[in-house]
Length: 83
Image 1 (cartoon, one colour):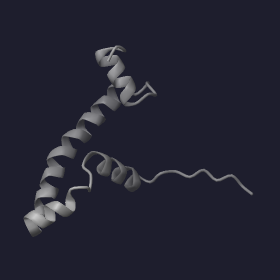
Image 2 (image 1 turned 90 degrees about the vertical axis):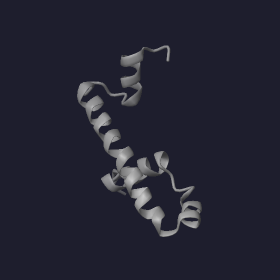
Image 3 (image 1 turned 60 degrees about the horizontal axis):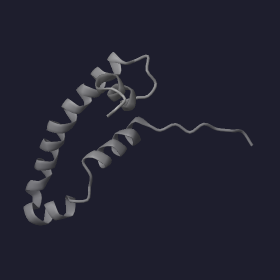
Image 4 (image 1 turned 90 degrees about the horizontal axis):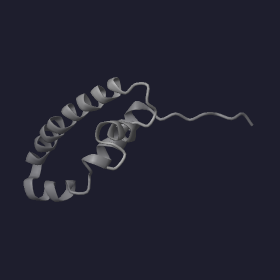
């Protein structure tokens, strides 16, 4: 049996980040309270959050491209190991 390496797709990664940060837990209550006006609200708030977030992650990734620890390395180099 050959050993196959499974890789995560870009869409899968984006959806994992989206659900962990933005979440879907309050979507039903938002639709209940706001109706169809919740859809543009979610789109607008996602754009206002994820565009600056993506720019920050790209900047940190470019600044620490030789590091392998991701967010841990960024925080360790910026505020020190104590935090």
